[in-house]
Picture (cartoon, rainbow, N blue to C red):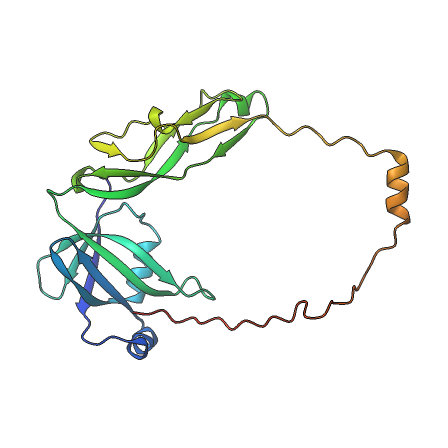
Length: 228
């Protein structure tokens, strides 16, 4: 089961872009918590605490959220909005409350373990096509990650969703989808004929090509605010 993280929050009375900007200047992050059987509620979370939290959890890590003096509730971090210019700055976070007796649908990270035979002995390349697996599970059985042993894979072989085993969970992805495979190494490029190399050498290098009309003149202004 995934480890549980802890988070303290306070109720946010006002909303809007102006309020959100003021909160961020004060080192706080606007947030919202919602879920089945409850109304959505606007919250405020300390920015430093939230940044540290999201740096070491995944989308499948339950978070124990305490709002004011109420009893803690468990939630998942559903969405983290970041500043597009400074990604380390969190603009807004969505929390989804979960309940012990209700199954939830979520994506869990896939972690490949081992070095495939086809890579170790024949120079193949391990290609990971799927990085998360969607499952339905009770909160107490949420795995931190799903480990996939790839050590036996030869060149041309693959592991599919149907080969995975997630205890106490229902896998929702298509069974025939490949999780990873070992592909053959790329053949070395053939040496170019001598006359081709001579032709290329004779072509003068262009240091400063004039721009065509309108080329490179786009000056897009990025809006760094997010709705709260």
